[in-house]
Length: 425
Picture 1 (spheres, helix red, strand yellow):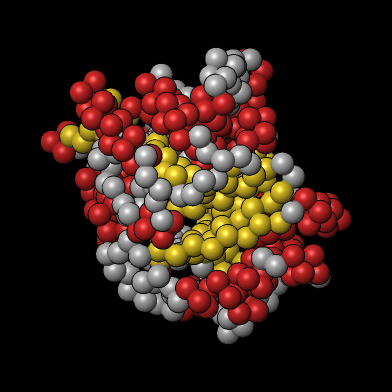
Picture 2: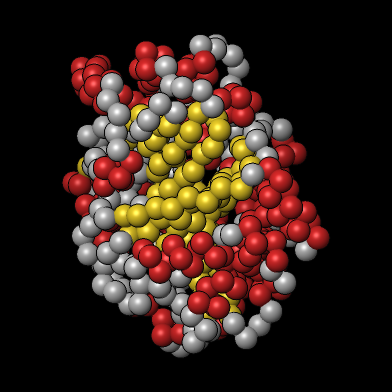
């Protein structure tokens, strides 16, 4: 799928500059980690699942890349490396600073931080956030000693009627695409960069792996109150959080009139796949812009209609269709990643990125996991949310070379406080 190749081109093109090809989940277990089971379950997971033996093979002369597999010798060497890592506790800050380029480690790896906490990393070129959740729960089945139990996963629906509906949705997404682009560009104006909120304040990106993160958790009672407020406003949690973020940013930078939020969407509903067998980052993003002189909640509801129409999918497909040269696209991604955010295109000058992985309902995770937070090294401020066992968890991550970490975290301390979330009018 060319859409997957486009995402792969981004990670391979910018990897040496922004260390971007790694998703992370910080997971606290309810019981102390059994080190012997940790090592054994990891080895079994890797050896019994071909997708987790993936490496990237580039063919510059053919202007493409492919997914391949590590040889048995390479696999054993990499497993030994991971097992040695698992035998030692790793400091969280040290781990955040680490970065291993594609193919130097297995695409899914685990590090123990303390007696209860593990940090799980997965190559973003191989999978998206929902797929990472799938592989975490599958590993936990091995860890629990119940690896033969049937695993719930997303799979393609073979029903003819469902396929017809999906085809109609895909056609609709492309029919709406020119309407979305025209509306977006007209609203953005002639020089959107100057009027768009940007907490990097126009800094020029540097080659760096210097990131900071901060986590925010809500207990069941707080989460339930937030969900009831969402229901009262006739909004989903994702929509409501988006409204909160926009209002909070405008309060912080009142001299700016435009905010652009990148919001990723899993494309499973439009292009079904199995996370156990499908290689590649099957995700698309919607650039959502909001303006201070208009009602925010109404703008949010209008913007989320574009999600329902499948615009992230058709927008990404358009980008893939016009990207004829793999090497050229890699270079273009690299050049854009080196530009200050206001100098990027109206579709790419993001104020922040917001991703909600949704409700994690795998029984094994609800049994074993006390809390889980997700992060990814992006160039925009990134907020990732998820809900497990009725509790909401969020994590903010940012480049310390682009943003003033204390300023950003102070802002999010306010925006993501239960008081602010529950009293927003």
